[in-house]
Image (cartoon, rainbow, N blue to C red; front, side, top):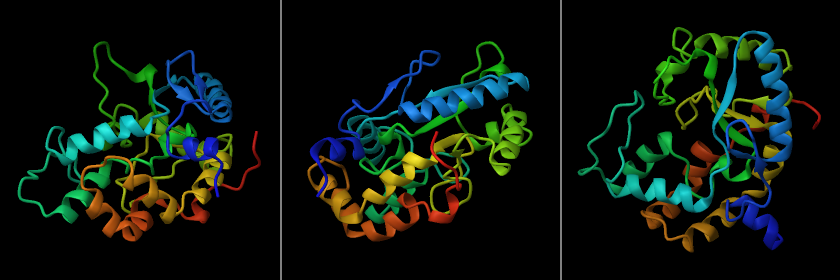
Length: 237
């Protein structure tokens, strides 16, 4: 049985485990912040300026995003980033469509503070509104040069334990901008069982909760669990 503090950390019910990144104003797990700061130092020497666009996200914040999409108050996007017409979608199809781009509350890696979304501030034209889309991080996109540099760092184990959990399409749309600090994230993922997640969802006032719980094993496999082989073999900082 999980201790109460660990359970609250796992599901994003507290922010006691994260600290402030003074540059971005975002909250991160302390070890993830150290890893990012080391990566940022190297990137700046190469002419880039990595900045955290989104760090820790609470259960409540993720639930607001989820419920907004489920209720048609926020757009639900297809794989190309185009808004879907959801009014006629059966509940299961709607759930799967939301999960393509938005994490299930309680199962978001952002809850842990180990994961964050990143941009290259050096590439931003004045007044540019970052969207975090596949087009922005494509090789020929505005952040393409930075991500090509980062590809090499990750491949050569010079990214200080940071890796892309959604580098390939396993359910969640590939998110080249999403980095994770592997040593701590792997420990927390191992604690996030289907049973614990379902218990949290049932008391979390979640839209489409019955449908989610009915298909939770499939959702867990496709959208939550990152296979062990995807994690880099690296010692903690």
